[in-house]
Length: 258
Image (cartoon, rainbow, N blue to C red; front, top):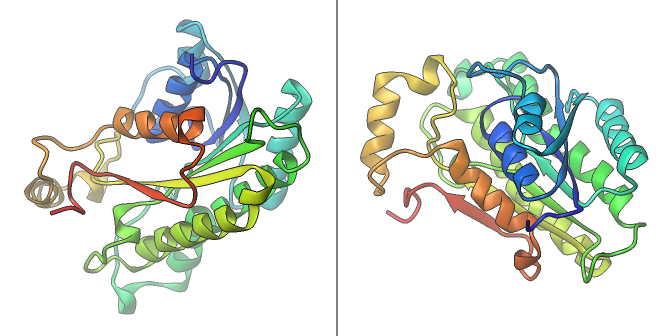
């Protein structure tokens, strides 16, 4: 019960990695706000809140469009009104419909749409969370923790994949900046960079060539799962990670190490 009595918001928690993080946090004692644009899991099955309730945890769904400041701020206000504080903010939501394109094939619409969710959404989440956390009583040394979802593509360039990689590189920088500026206030901010994860996405993400390439680059003898990322998020959200600040933790089976 490493998150007992903690209050957490997980954006994009209806599906995939966010769903796994929400379930893991609830299993460890947190009250979880599932902040997403709809309740339907991309991979199928009952809504995340129902799954958590069936597992004995505490969760509720709050509609939230991370690309809109008012929506993110309202979600934080709701969490605090309901539970009295906000201990953990996981900025996980990312654009769901995306086809990699190189520079000359990237439209303004794709560029702006990707950054609005993947980067501006994280900016909004950090800003709304820190504004709340900075004024609340600390638990031990810490007033609040932020966990941002980056990607290995924010660290390594991927051929023909411009806007997604730029958005994730921005998340890494944003994480370092928030950590540096607000460590003195008891705010812990870190990021996770997943490798190739099998999350239930369709289309380009599971094209045979993409899977084959990912397997060839991953030293560990399987690709990742949402539960792998959830374990890392739990660690960074727990008291065990207090002196880790501004880091991006690779959860990629050794891809970046090879």
